[in-house]
Image (cartoon, rainbow, N blue to C red; front, side):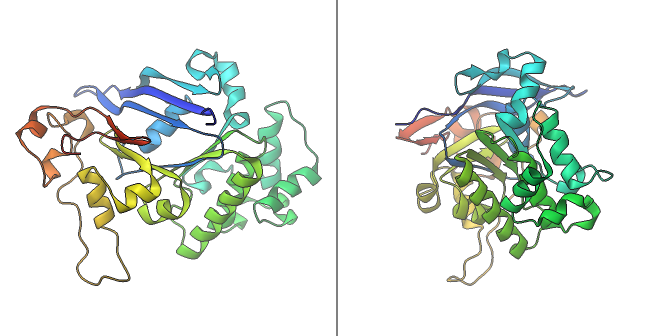
Length: 314
């Protein structure tokens, strides 16, 4: 079996708050193999984007990485100095950020922004190379001379993908790349991401809360709740046989063409990370909760090869 290209081991991220420490990522572990598509799903505030930023060592004060290691191949990213880590970003691990309009410089042409990212890594490329990158993501060579405000939302997102693949990274982290786009453009952006990922042979971490999108794109899915990775399994397995009650509730909330009726939501609200309930953080919203759930925090257990669940009832 192919060795993982990325290993996240017992990663924890905390933020200092006047009312106490907030642990946004709590002892998360997973591995990613070359060419694999791994999804991170969960409600807003579950820790998905924070974990993505922690992998890239982009957590800023008052946040900090409390513990754990991230390994890219045989390199422990936590042991790199700041200059070596800066060089690893984009060349080794690239980010397609959420909100393309906020990530693109509004006063620089698209081609200049691609060239600037490459130049920062000591790589000089011609205009023809930049035009080729734009064509790979479905944009015309003329996009090189345009400013971000001249592009549609989908075009801006594809420009961000062009920057992300400019140095052929081994891992691409896509943080809700279809946020605020209509369904037709969402499909175009995801098809672009899939195509360039296949061309490069890169692995992808797709961060989002759209379970339908995850089902169509990823090979394996991790479900996060209150900073913890509560279930990880192959996508076909987790959609058909979800084991954690939170995963079951997420999938039950999906609309279906074949079954009409009232949509089923998840009762209650996600807890405040600075004031988590004792035991399992999901127990106030869980229909299967018992006294053990209210008292004892469940450990992550491997139920079968590739299937990990943090639940007393799984």
